[in-house]
Picture 1 (cartoon, rainbow, N blue to C red):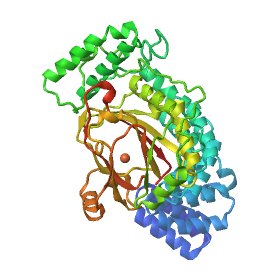
Picture 2 (cartoon, rainbow, N blue to C red):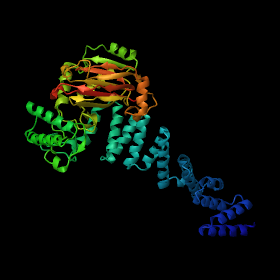
Picture 3 (spheres, rainbow, N blue to C red):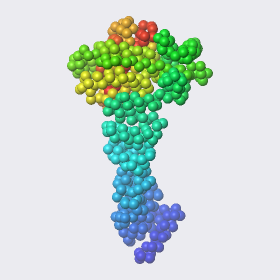
Picture 4 (cartoon, protein in one colour):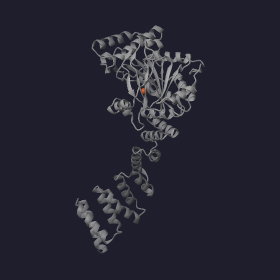
Length: 520
Ligand SMILES: [Fe+2]
């Protein structure tokens, strides 16, 4: 082929390509390259043709040759980057773009960085993902989503300080996204900054759960009406509000709504609802009670006046030894709290209307750190245990705190393990609330769930877990309910709540406070 015929062949190839006659265009370009292997126009055209045909892998060969011959060409570099991206090789594409001078700015780079970051993130390559997202955040500093994603990976990688900075930026840019706040709170938990965690969570739940009587008289929140309900919840709330009224703590306006709440519960019981069944109230059912129902009406704030939170007479070396000597890792701590802290925490749980979680099937309600269960006594208790057991609890951050409050009768919570390193479980109902002193507590099985099991494998009833307990569960240790008795146990240890059969009366309801420290 002479230079003239090559030029003609290229022109015809382009026409064929544009006319959609791809096979003849490809054949012609390959003939040109057979005659002139370094014809950059033919190499580039063949690369583009193959990419258009979805053959990116093959396109890379002529495109890379072309790039070697024309190292400064932006279109050729971008064509190579495009082929790499089409092949899902985003990190290489970013690398190439970086070395391509003027091509390495703008939208193309941002899109590639996002894709390279996502790819590394999904593959669990945290360091790579962080590198890509960091650069992306630098190029799009006003994107809450980018800062949020960077923060989430930093959190997973254990870089609390940079995670905190990224997530704070995300939360500032998009305060309505609760996910950013939740992860920012996690970054603070790992640093033990629990008071700041409380303030962060309050930004979201206070407007949602505020009532005409809390946080201040006449100030209502903007949360939607709480329409989910159960007989368990309504009966509890009626008992609690009646109790608050007897103490003189129920505001008159709230007390005026109490009869409507009683009528609603009576109507639902008559309609045949089962106690633990969770359902949605109709607007007509909700209307008379919605200013009060499942909102914060009263939040107790017990003051300790300098008293210690933990019982100063506890023998922590014995407790640590018990934990280490037991098979699955557990220890019973009788008398965990000082009398003042126990009294304060009991009043806090009995009086505060923060049992917002009613979604558990069966008969118990929950209050959580992220929705109001956040008193200083709890923080001091967690810090005290961490300091007292520096090897067992000390290395692990407090990640979650909740209170569960039970119906008088309940069939218990079946065997499971928890997603943490260590659990602390404290009971605060009176000793004589549970007539059988050996009952009403926890069963700890001498078995730990395998380390490679996921949450759904060990936190739900399923055939594999059933078989595991049958084969390895052995005879569980039975720890009866006592006021101020705590059970410290490895979260991997299979455990179950015994069936509950407590005496009647609001103050006799079983309450357990659970703290989860660290990761499995
Ligand atoms: Fe548990």
